[in-house]
Every structure is written in C-alpha cells, then in structure tokens.
Image (cartoon, rainbow, N blue to C red; front, side):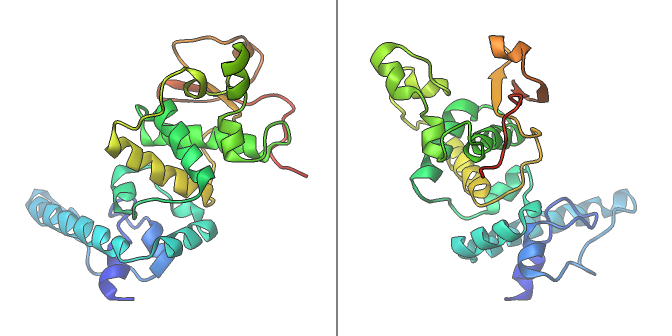
Length: 235
C-alpha cells in the first residue's frame, strides 16, 4: 500500500494526533507532515494542507475495496467517526436485503437528523435484532406489525412502514449517507450513543410508554429509551 494511502487515512479526528479509520486499516502516520498552528502566519499553510489531505483521503479510500473496508470495520469499529467528511470518503454502500431495510428505515425515520442522530436510530434497530423480545432480522424488526396494520389498522413499530405512502427515495444524497451508516452499523460499528435503547420518539409526541421506560439519551429531535427487562443478547 502506498505512503499516500497510509497518510491520507490518518486525518480523521483533526490534526491533533487522533487516529481515524485509515490508521487502523493501513498503519503508518503523518509524522512530520502536519503543520502545528503556532500563530496567525501559519493559517494559510494549514488550510492548504488540510484541503490537500482531504482530497488525498477521498482518493485513498476510493482505492480500497468495499469488502476490505467492511472486514476492518468489523475488527476495529472504534475507528468510525460521526463526521460527514469521514462518510463522504467511504465507498458507495451496497449489501443484502437486511442492509436495504436498515438504510430505508434510517432514510424515512432520521434523514433530517444529524449524523450522530442517524447512527443512534440504527442502534435502536440493531438492539432490537439482538434481543429475544423482537424479531431476529433487521427487515423483520423494521416492518414488524406492518402487514397487520395494513389489514386491520394495528400499529407499526416504525411509522413509515404503514403510513400508506410509497417508499420513494427522493433525496439521493441523504440516502447515500444513511446507506453508508447502515453498512457501517451492520458490519459491527460500536453502539455507544444510546446505552442499549430499544425505543425512540420525536420531541413532538409523548407516547405512554415513554413515562414507564428509562430515558437513555437525547440526540437531536429524538429521545431514546430502553425497555425494562429487555435483554440485548440472544441465547
């Protein structure tokens, strides 16, 4: 792997020595290549270097096969950043039907949220998959109750699944972003935002269960809760 690839993938959390996903993948570093802001006279040099490194990072990640990225995310999920530049540098996402169900749910339930908020909603869905109290696949979790709702007016777990509207993707950029988030989460990115949440709702509503479940997080327009007694690991 070239020095360019190794260097480009080290930018991640800024230029203060924090390690990003690229460092996990390729090792190496930017020692001797970064400019420390010692005063106003260094601003132009820093800006030029940052722009150059962002371009190098995108080129470097685009040269890595999606399978290689997924493999390393499974092993080093801590390299994931809640950052748009990080996501833009990743290859376009693709995957199985369960990946598509997760991406679709994130698009319709959370595309207007911050990146962190979108990861948080993904955590809820995957926490349910891991619990014996819910279906054991992503698609079955996302569409739980949808068929019954269409037949007899019952309730859905996720409102978009039975609101009667076609699931048409109109905002391609937003979908491409949540598709990458779905890929990362399905491939084992850490769930560190919601403390095992199994439920969420917008601030505009106040469902009955929200007064009974402990709240675990508040991220953007959503409040997150964990259902008492729900285990997050299948036997």
